[in-house]
Image (cartoon, rainbow, N blue to C red; front, side, top):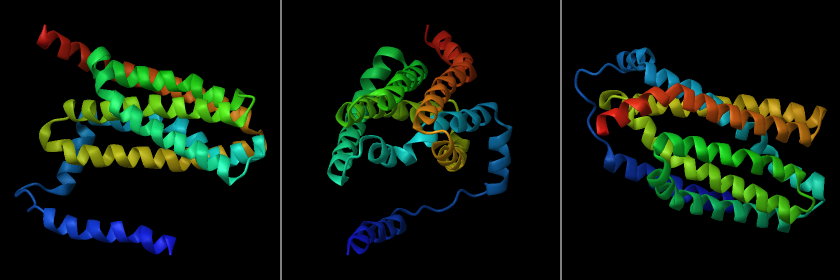
Length: 229
């Protein structure tokens, strides 16, 4: 019954997609758009940094429930409480994202949000109790979702209008490929060396990805500042 209930919104989206369908742009070859995107330096940087940004979370997040179960010997009620806390943190982070953008700008907002999430990921593993680990995990989620809307906005600003839809698809693909690969690696690490090494590596990858994003796009930020100055 739960699965059938979950399918109902998906079936509704099929009708909405049909109602929102638009005619394809004349003269635009999908293969041409694909290669045009790959030839554009900003799109290439978005794809490569997308792989990096997804790697830290992709390494750890699929195993968060198992981590709480095996480390703290909690039950489904406590794990559900942690998940609810993370969901509320997601909403709060999305609402706080415009404030971060107003204070730091899009590029620095992405970098600050991702960087700030790294120590909280590590503290999730170091926390002595399940509720303090859950709190650290919620703060980590808040920081990530402060930066994610800014990343989407920034991505569209550095890509020409005619390439944005294809570039968005390529970026989405790069994130999901990274999530799949790092999820498999994370499972191997958790089984072979345990959760401390897994969370530590996830923290290092998160910081490295934030640095890579800043180095990849700092020139675009400086160019935008010079135009508005």
